[in-house]
Image (cartoon, rainbow, N blue to C red; front, top):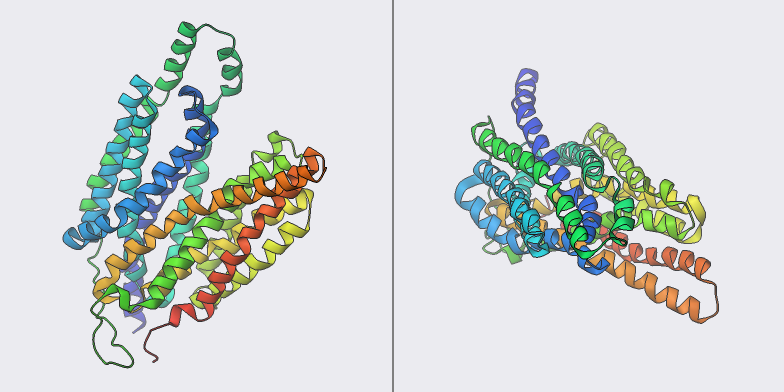
Length: 440
C-alpha cells in the first residue's frame, strides 16, 4: 500500500512541475501590465483613463473567451488546450511588432487581448487539471504551489519589463515637453521600438513551450461521474443545478477584486499618506511576498493539518480583521495592513476551486470556464474603490479640510469596499460550498 502511494506521488510530480511552469508563464505575462500602462501612456500620449485600457483589454478577454475556451477544451482535451493557449499567447506577442511600428494604441490593445485570450484558454485548462490531478482534499495544496510560481513570475516580470520599458521615462517626459513636433515623433517612435525585441523573444519562448507541452508526459485525467441529487436521486442535467458552483463564482469574483485592490492600490495609498514615491514603489512587492510566504505555508499545512474549507474560513476572518485595521490606523502601519492582505488572499483561490468543482462530473470544464470568468472582478471592484475615494475626497474638501489630510482619509475610506467581499468569502467557506450537494 505504501509503495502504491509513493508511486502515485511520483506519477504526479512531473505533471505538477510542468503545470507550475505554465502558471509561471501566465503570471509573468499578467504582471508586466503594470509596466506597460505608464509606457503606453507616454508613447501614445494618452490620458490616465485611456492608459488603463491595457488592463481592461486583458480582463475583458477572460469574460469573452472563457466559455469558448471551455468548448475548445471539451473538444480537444486539457493537454492540447494548454498547448493551443500558449501558441495564441505567442501570436498576441507578435502583434506588438506592427503595433510598435505604427505606434497605434488600438493595435497594442489587440495584442494584449489576444494574449489574454490565450491565457484564458491556458487557465481554463490548467486550473481544473491541477485540481483533479490528485486527491480532491489536497487540491488546495497543489494550487498553492501554482500560486507560488505565479507570484514569483509576476515579481520577476514586473522588475524586468519595468527596467526595459520605464528606465529614464521621467527624464524622457521632460524632454518631450520641450522639443518640436518632428523630434517628438522621432523620440516616441524610438521608444515604441523598444518593445519589439522583448516581445519577439516572448513569442519564441511561448511557441516553443506550446510545442513542448503537446509532447510533455502529462497523464490524461478524467472527471468523475456526477453526484446524484439528495432528494431526486437523478443525475444532474444542467450546470444551473449546482448552486455551490455559482456561489463559488461569486466568491471568486469578489476575491479577485480584493486581490487586485491589495496589489494595485497600495502604492497610490502610500503616496496619499505622504510617503515618498521612491519608497512607495516597492509596496506592491510587499503584498506579493506576503502571498508567496502564505502559499508556502499552505503547501505545508493542507491537507495534513487543516482542510481546504478551514483555510478558506481563516483567510476570510483575517481579511475582515485587516480591513478594519487598515481603516482605523494611519501612516506606514496602515500600509503594512494593506500588504498583509496578501496573507489573507493567498489561500482563497486554491481553496475555492476544489470546493466549487466538487461533484461537477462532466460539467467540470464548463464550470472551470465560469470560474475563470470570475476574474473579471479584478476589472470591476478596483474602479469602485476609486469611486469611493473620489466621493469621500470631494465631501471632505467641501467641509473645509485641507487637501493632504483629505486625500489620506479618502484613500483609507475606500478600503471599506473590502468588508462585504470578505463577508461573502466567509459565507462560502462556512456553508456556501455545501449548498445543493448531497450529504454523505
